[in-house]
Image (cartoon, rainbow, N blue to C red; front, side, top):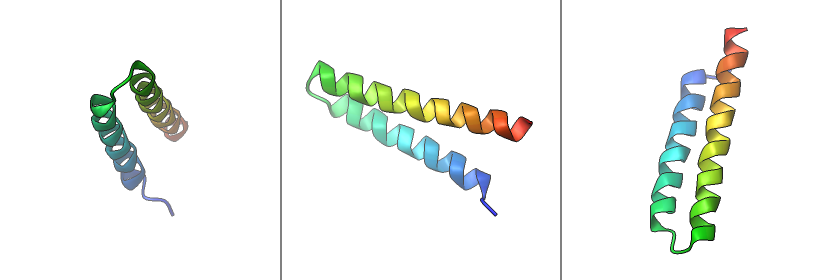
Length: 54
């Protein structure tokens, strides 16, 4: 069985790391890449939450 708390914590940890990388990015393209990564992680989290509520 999957521990959902661990899954959500991993997503949040990944978002934090991505924010740090975004802050370190030197170009606009790099910043936009990390913004996309963070957005994708947020979408994954929302889909998981919706599936759990079903």
